[in-house]
Length: 81
Image (cartoon, rainbow, N blue to C red; front, side, top):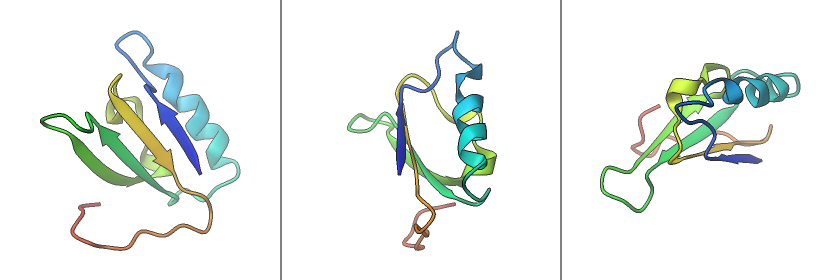
């Protein structure tokens, strides 16, 4: 499992592409990720996406991204994918 904290900002937009591309060399494109933003605050959110779909618009300075390992799967429990 890999976690990225504070992955992008207004000035650092391209920084998220590099770790995504590195991970895609070793993991399938449909590897699940959790995108958590503003946790513990009003308006906080948690989303699940595939690694291939990760881009700079998915995160900001208040985000944490957790990328699963090869054995992880998503269990549908009321979260939108």
